[in-house]
Length: 458
Image (cartoon, rainbow, N blue to C red; front, side, top):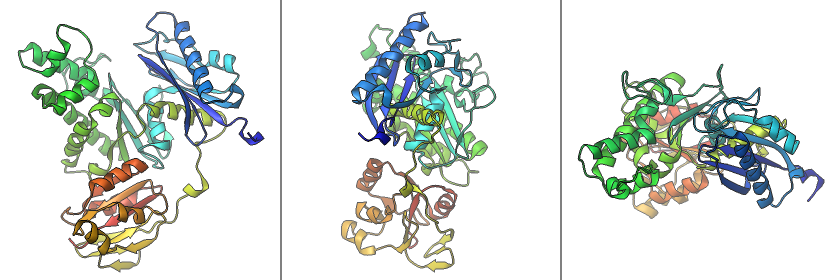
């Protein structure tokens, strides 16, 4: 290893109520070692600190490096935190409330330690390496036992006066609705979190309705896990489908409010419920937002699931750790943005890009170059120009875009083939599929590396 690589790792730690996850990570975001531990349920905060220490040590060991090669540590806690003081202010489910958690780590490891709220860190991770990569206006909503949120505006994480900015779970959606853990009534969390979903399912069962969940639980008071919900949805369970649909509708309404208030480039949905049930919930959420008459662009392209899963929080903590060490999240020189053309308009049979008008379908590649679409590629693969497949996407994605806008035509007839959607998913590329007029607005608004295909002949 060269001298330049002797301090080339960062450690991110996600301390939740049930698990503590640590990861040793390269500056590029590549995870080289992970360690997971159960978070203690005791009253002694030293027990939790011991678990954090053990997880860090194990993650570094599994990465095959030494602590001398670690530059900084990022610590994300499921709590209200004071990053400047290094303290946990309040947390209902752990024994860390009131504790200075930064000083013990700095004393043990002699490294800079940065502290943040777990959902803020999850949003930061997604903005760095996940579904919001290279976007400047990102809202993260994480749906699990509760509902948390984080927001990045103009490329900066917004913390607020009391470190409470982005708490979308406590927007009041239904006055005099169900009691929330925060003490208010009708919060989004009280209507659409896994806790709320479980409450409503149990109430339906108590009212005499049949559900596979009742069979699985028997007389047990065990929690209804997110994977149980997904199995019930796949099996067509009427109670679970009804409750989950209602939860998705509330989340969709919350997204409408967020769109109107903040106008983010993307709303990223994460957390255990979305990880397990996103295939059911995300389309239902998009449908609600797409139905809003006032929004200037469709939510289909701006409501996306998390790409990083369990790694979102630890990677966000690493991004924070890099800043604590005097660095910013790595941006390769190849990831600087080209000068993209401005699309003036797109109507049936015509699209104007800059000072040039095209009378056929076009690509705007990731490197900013405008190319006429090759009709023979789609016709050979699908017999129609209405489907866009992987062969075309290979051309469109030259220049390494992070977002692809699909202009579906005036009537929304052009679609990505399933294998093309899978290709973009595997490459971690966000896709916005919209009717042409909305696609034009979305493309022009996006910052960062992007590409587009426009179907103007239908």
